[in-house]
Length: 504
Figure 1: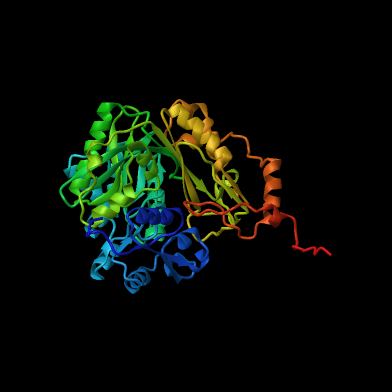
Figure 2: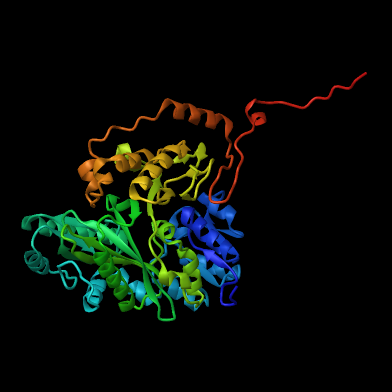
C-alpha cells in the first residue's frame, strides 16, 4: 500500500453513503471514524466504523452541518482526511477551506472549483467559454425584470426560472406565458432565499420532454481527466431522481462520444480534480445542453461501477492522496446494463409524503448481479430529521430487458416492514410499457403514473409486521456486511428454562 494514503478518514455523513465510504476504507485498510447525531446512536454506520463519535443533537445544523465540530473531531481523533459523501456539507466550499486550514485533506474537489460550479450562472459562462453547449437564456443573473423579459422573448416561451445557488427543484418555476413572468420570478427568489440564503435567480429556455443524462468524470493531479460514460436519470418526482440506469437507450456511439468529450472539457475548464458528474439535458432531436456539475460522488454512482467494474469511492480516496487514478480506468468499457432504485421512506400514495417509525422487519433480496447499499437494518428508527433515503437497490444483467425483470423481482423480495417505502411504486414504473420501451423523459411520472392503482399491502405483509413487532426488539438484520440472525425458535416460544432430571 502506498505511503501516500491516509492514517484515518473521518466520514462526514450518515446512512447508506457513510456505510459505502466505510467499506471503501476497509478495502484500502484505512481506519475510519464515523460521526453521528444523538438520533443515530445505534445507526449502522456508527457501528460499522472503526471508531465513532457523537457530534451533536438531531438538527443538522447542530450535527452533520456543524462544520467546526466536525473539524475538531477529526483533529481530536488524529484523522488526516475527511470524506463528505453527498448532501450536508459535501458541496459547501467552506468545508475544503476549513480542512486545508486544519491540515486535513478534503476528499473531493478544491473550494475554487466547487464555488464556480455551485453558481449556476458562473458555470454557464465558464462552459460557454469551454465550448460546452448551454441552454439558451440569460448570460448573467440580474434583478431587473426587464432583463428577464428580454431573455424570455429571445429564448421563446416556455422558459424556466432557476436559483443560481442551488438545485433539487428549489427556486425553480416553469413560465408558459409573459403575464406569468413577474410573479414567477418573485416566487422563485423567495424560495431560493429560504433554501440557499441567496435569492439570485436566472432564466433559460425550458426544454420540453427532455432526457436527464449525466456523465461520470474523474480527474487526478497528474493531468488525467476521463469520463466513465453516462447515466440516464430521467425518472424523477418533484425534480428528484428515483430510478437511474446505464447505458441510456437514447445514446448512439457518436452522441456518447460528443457528450463524453464535453463532460471532460467541463471538468478541465473548472480545474476540477476528484470524482464529479456533469449533467446534461438531451432534447428530442439529440441536442444536448449543460445543466450543472455536481462536485461530489453521486447517489447513483453504483450503476457506473456495475457496468465498468470500477470503485469510484476508492478512486476518490486515492486521487485525494495524490495518486494517479488506476490504470484500468483508461481502458474502461460498458458491460451489460445496470439499474438503480432509491428506496425512500415515503408514501407514494400520499404525494410521496415522508414515512417515519421503526423498521420491524428487514430482509434484503439476494442473487447474482444484485447489490444493496443500505444504511438501515431491522430495528432502525426512521425519523423525519434527515433525507428519507434508506438504501439503494442495484441490479446488473446482460441486457436492459433482463435488468428490468431482475429489478422487479428484487424489489418484490425486498422486505421492509413497519414504515412505508417507495418499493411498490418503482415496481409499477419499471413494469410500465413506456418504461420498457425506453421512452423515459423527465415528465414520465406526471404523464404515466397518475392513474396507477393504489398500493394495497398484502395480508401476508400485515401479518408479518405484526409478528415482527411481537418478536423483534431492536434485533439487527443485514446491512452492508453486518450480519444478524433471525429469531431462533427459542426466542419465539415465550419464557422458558432448562431443567435437569437427576436419576435416582
